[in-house]
Length: 172
Image 1 (cartoon, rainbow, N blue to C red):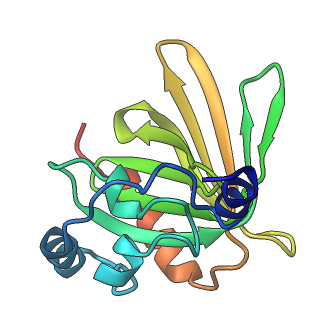
Image 2: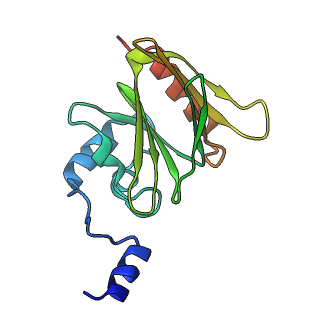
Image 3: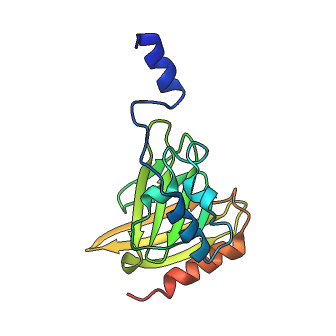
């Protein structure tokens, strides 16, 4: 492979990593068990549109994805500073039966931020202005983080509120 071929592959998002293998049957099973009808096998297995790798690769074997939301920017506040995570593809927010997954889609790789429900101090939907945010305050052993996921591009406000309610009522 020449240098030009390498640049062409990288520009197309096709680095040396072909990505993890996807279990289509598992994706269909998980989609059938989801609370949100928008969680389909295609939504869990599609890569390249939202994220570099399929969302199902971030879901543990013992968890059930319940909701998937499309988003823009993710901001993470640790009390001292605010970091803006701007995806080159798209932000995907997956709410499972046990945690929030914020997948920031990147051209060459994704960034994953996870918040188990037992570390959630508070979560709510902020839709007071023109933008809609899913806000998750987390406290993990005294380390406080706040995640602001801009989900304005996903118009399903009722589903977002249901996801927040599910997380608040999850057993610890």
